[in-house]
Length: 64
Figure 1: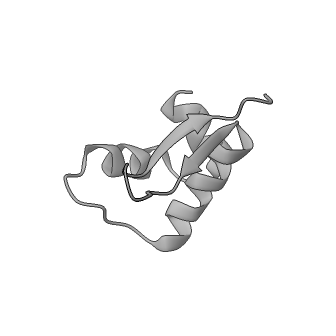
Figure 2 (figure 1 turned 30 degrees about the vertical axis):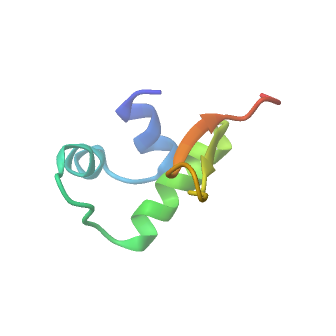
Figure 3 (figure 1 turned 90 degrees about the vertical axis):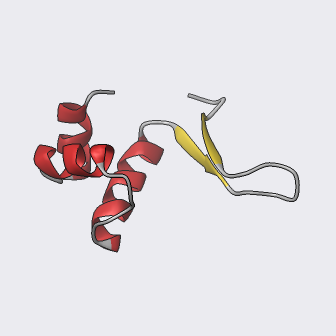
């Protein structure tokens, strides 16, 4: 998924996505990150929490 499509699906500006992707530190509003995460989850991305052995990650849902 490209920036333009994610921008449209998440209803956030493309300049916002570019700023987030290029930033060294995580900056921005919680609402913006929630909108991006929700759009990605709707598109089939699953966010994985860290456990005792591995850190957090993402993967595609197997039922898409």
